[in-house]
Length: 54
Image (cartoon, rainbow, N blue to C red; front, side):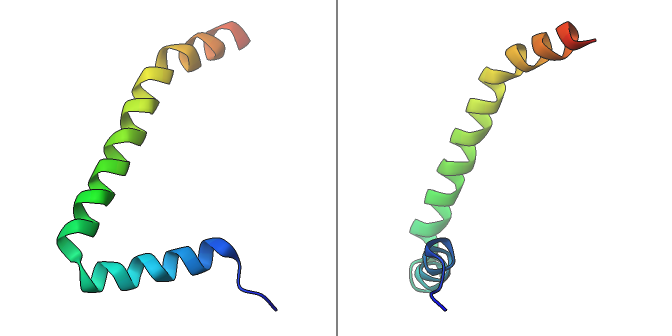
């Protein structure tokens, strides 16, 4: 059975973290920051949808 692409990507990422933990930590923090910013931007629209549904 073929390994799924995301499992291969995750294992490569973990190996990279072991080898280059400072760069991997900064990259991870940047991705998390980006996701939080997107969530904050979408929050008013989600609240509006929830209020309209009730």
